[in-house]
Image (cartoon, rainbow, N blue to C red; front, side, top):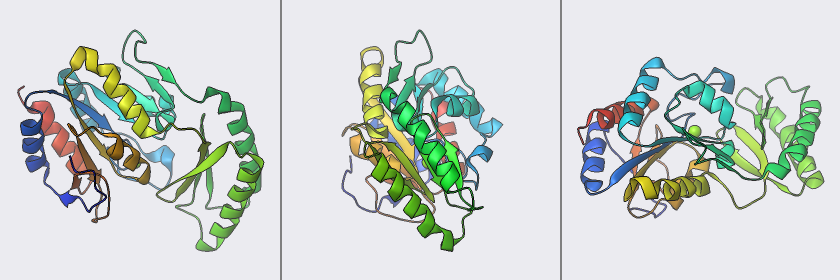
Length: 268
Ligand SMILES: [Mg+2]
């Protein structure tokens, strides 16, 4: 639909549910969902972002009617454990690691040869940033994330310096910037948007024609908004208006759950 980098207009969960139902009338809905900041509120430490039981129930109900995939920057086992539903598809590590709910027909791994190099950078950065108390180095399989949400502003230049040194030593990696988090990830042409396309194409034979709906809140989600087909809808989750390739904006994870509840209840 709207692929310009405009300011997506705000919409209520009820109006969005009606719109999606109308737009997808002749096709099958597939829900692609970011995790942090979309299904759960953003927290200071990523380990604290747990899924509310009410939200889990909504996802369970939704997945009984439509394919549902979680596309997250978290490692796939991490996000899978947090959601804890075996009826969903999971694309973890920004889409590098994908697993379907059954028979491994929808499993995909990208960039596995980067894993040893990522381990080296984790060891280097943990040592290098150990003295900065508000900086948290998150170990992931395909990337290392440096969280600065709790960091003093004065510590940021030291973080940037450490990242520049790491990149100089590991030119096969690149940075990916999110909400007070900088990640070093393999510099290959694969991201959440490619994972979304891969999932949509994989689901097409059994579920097509597909109308994908993607909800996400962060910079990395713009890759998905950009990758969505014309026949699909991207929803930005953000308190304040901002430029995005999404078509509409819901203001909070609470509104996301409200919208998904309506879609799970819709008789189709
Ligand atoms: Mg997010």
